[in-house]
Length: 227
Image (tube, rainbow, N blue to C red; front, top):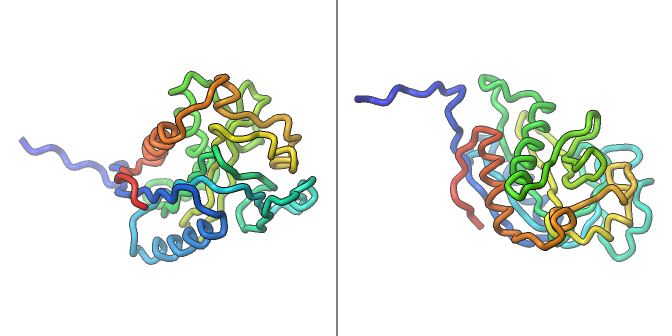
């Protein structure tokens, strides 16, 4: 008996994962821009970039971003075109950049929906470790008990191809957030999986889980990681 055809508006979209390991911010950013152009031209499939950055502070488009850098010290500061304010990336933090073409026929051309799906995926990953993540109205990202921020989001979009993305604090050294007001908030609000659980978490395990949960949230069938 033949299996019934699946509706193209709901069937998973083929995609791939590009794992950059630990890579400097500028190199990863340049790679994103290359992939965005290729995706706009339909020369590649949707691509989820996963990466861990050395210490860096990034400034989004918010006019307050520069003022929220308190004491960068030796940490590199980079101005970029994503939405949002200032944030920190560093070792022990899992960063994911979905280079996805949002399709009108699938109802995907809604950036608020895109943000909520990023949050959904991270909430699902945290739940695997018995951490209850949630949302705070008007404050993009994932929070614990509404008062501790464990993940940040900042995106950009060109011709409905997304880039930039999310940062989940796994085993992050939270002291580096003291150099900024992250996303306009006091650094005291920042937390990590390690802090919530009282023990370090296997980074590669969390990476694999988040890849799976992002695929589910966005209806993407993501192939095994490339490098």
